[in-house]
Length: 346
Image 1 (tube, one colour):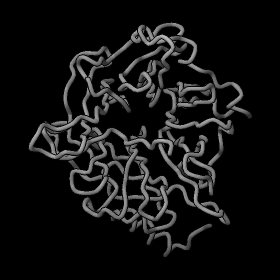
Image 2 (cartoon, rainbow, N blue to C red):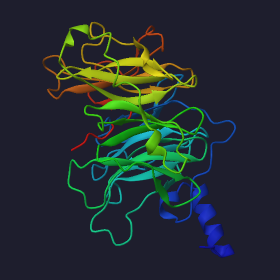
Image 3 (cartoon, rainbow, N blue to C red):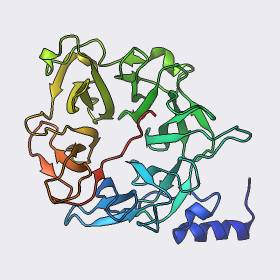
């Protein structure tokens, strides 16, 4: 729909002053040339789940995508930095989990997804991630599906309102992320049995799902030789610019750790980045930072006596070579920090 000049001016003003969520047609623009990017975390440090950007110089936290940090009536989570600096995330502020887009400074916000017309009940949208420079890929349940139903993957251009479905397999497909070339998507699927890392190398072909390949299912974990018949679960893949993929792997009943594979998958080799002696509470939801270090979440761990009883989660970072482990979350914090707080299948 074309806007009249007065209406267009109102939309532009709403975008400029950070009111994008209240102005239909307002999609936040890319970051300016002087934009400064810190790492993103999801935290309940102010009483409600919100997204924060941590300043790389002093670690101070800046609220992203919301005007209130203490309103428990809605939650923001699953942030993903796009190549131009904008931030895609999920919020249920309008009653249903939808995908939103914020400017790099987190002030202007626009909703990208909405319930399809005539749906008996809403679809659940989750886990947005960049796919090239002007698209995102995300997971979505079927409208009206029961809790715990499988999810499928969709791709959405930032300048168009319609999402294109990528997968239709009865298995659960989720946690997608675009490859460095902007054409492929790595994701988690249990279509072969247990959750493994899969790759669709070209989402623009007529049937991209038909050429999806399992990257981790055919090779056992060298780092878990004593598992025998015990299975393992893979999750949260994050591609690096050279085509390598870092992901989490957990034995059934045990905490996950981070592993890395090359572009051809685990058959060509599997390298462990974190280990249980150093991180007994595990490592999950890796995110590749601009300097190619990896940010991840560890937990739940139980705080010492005389402190809060609830299990806690904390964010760390590590070099991709497995050294220089650094805690990002404040030590002995009375709150939880996550990298993305991805949605489990319920």
